[in-house]
Picture 1 (cartoon, rainbow, N blue to C red):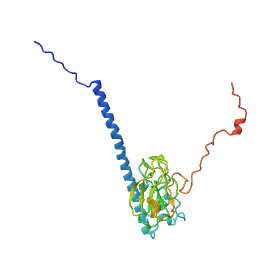
Picture 2 (tube, one colour):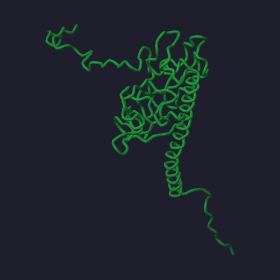
Picture 3 (cartoon, rainbow, N blue to C red):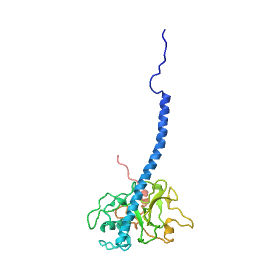
Length: 265
């Protein structure tokens, strides 16, 4: 007598396959944001470390120059003082305080190519688009320890600084990190990720009690200057980009009134 046995073929049914695909898609959807958050944190840590190294270099310079930072010291090659952050940081190379320009970069931001040129000019050090950091002008090594000294480049030199959160993550002047954050380094050598007062549009640091923020509070409400990075050749921190006429290139009204030229057959 034969006994009938039912054997199931090895493999997934269509429903089981769809369930597996759905589970994988859900796990991937959870993993991608988590991975992006980890990558963002790693990049911010690297940028914060660069910021601290810039401050340390400024401190070493001040120790050799009567507590003055490079923006207040005459450059022997130009005969003047720095008009932007690049020129100020460039003096650090001329006085042999540092010999590596990579600290002036930021992951997902402006970054140098590592070439600094030769002594005494070091003409290739921190050139246009190779510096991510702005600095407060006119401070010395004896200024208040909590005043912001080095910070990510704002949109303009107005005090307190503002950033454009709508271009977060892009390599553009005034950009922020996603979520409306920037890195700010203080006179005491610390650097931290600061949450701004918004995640879109023009933003700044939140106000504290009394209507002041970390910039105005540390300077007793006095307006300070900001040295901006050079973001392209020929543009300094005190020069505004000319505004392009939105009608530029369009036909003029008198041209539209002229009779049209007949089409050739």
